[in-house]
Structures are given as structure tokens and as C-alpha cells.
Amino acid sequence: MEKRYQYYAFISCSRKDEKWAKVVATNMANQPVADVKYCPECGAKATKTAKFCSECGGRF
View 1: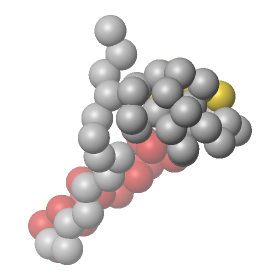
View 2: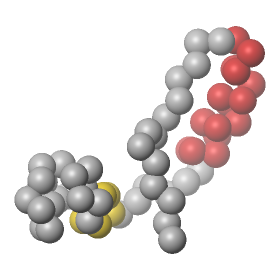
View 3: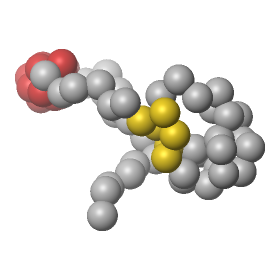
View 4: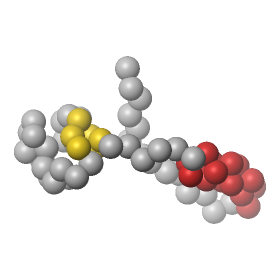
């Protein structure tokens, strides 16, 4: 089962997190961009260019 999270990023203003932020940024830069996205209303999978959900009609 694919994990889905409510948030895509965590922003910290603490200098203690600077080293960890660089590690995370490097790892994120190496990840491929997904060709799909998920409807925030019903969770249905859609193409990344879709403007509306084909299941519930919700707007992206």
C-alpha cells in the first residue's frame, strides 16, 4: 500500500536543523517527479495535468 501524507514539507527556522535540511533537500532533488497526483477530496489517482477529478469532480 502506498503511503500518502497530509503535508509535503516541514519548515524549520532553527539553525540546529540546517544540516538535516541539506540532507533532505539533496534527497528530494534526486527523486523523480511523479506522473500522477491524488484528489484531495476522494483520494483517486489522476494524471498530473488533470484539472478535475474523474471520480468525484473535485478541483485540483
